[in-house]
Amino acid sequence: MIQRLKGVDKIASGYTGGIVHGVPTYREVCSGLTGHAEVVQVTFDTDIISYHDLITVFMTSHDPTQLNRQGADIGTQYRSVIYY
Image (cartoon, rainbow, N blue to C red):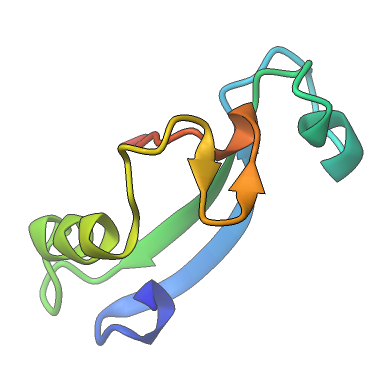
């Protein structure tokens, strides 16, 4: 959804916030032992779309009240975080 917004230049997925150095594997993150969260990095043009508008879209398409879960995806890697 966010990648289709006018002003969003690039989306990159990955993991952050954990204790494993380097790039952890999907299997390592899914084990729950690394402390990482699944994240996306959004690069955007502030002349076209504001940070506030991005957060509004994110919060209306994401349920931060589900502990360690997003839809059918369950685990600590699916906790709700925003890194700015």
